[in-house]
Image (tube, rainbow, N blue to C red):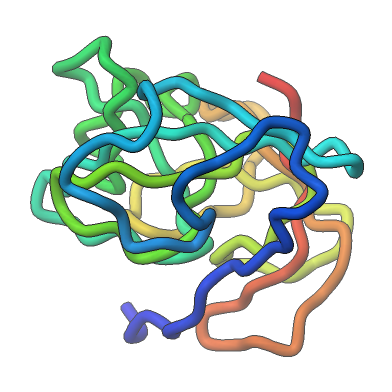
Length: 169
């Protein structure tokens, strides 16, 4: 797999409907600044959720899929697809930054986001696949459910970071 491209998904926080105590693109804090599960939205319909990150041996990467860890019910996410509660159904959102293991931070759960994908084809559905830290093309007739649709190609390549519209869960 290609080396991870380093960037953060930075958003202005002055349009958020609920206040936040930690930047959306922060690498996290050891002590929770919000109750895990706290959400905020903006005027464009994007939504972010505050979670705890458990690496399970796989680092969080900005734009990568976050999945609910199968061993917890306390709003803990991982980027280790094999540790997801259910392939496709375990999708939690998109990492906003590189989160430090066991730290608290933000994932995006709704709306338009730059996502780390194996495809940039506009109109294609994406899903969490077998590979960690990257969205895969959703193949019709497979068990994986689509979690988003590529809506705009991006100039960031290797891997590709197209604009994706996340589907409602």
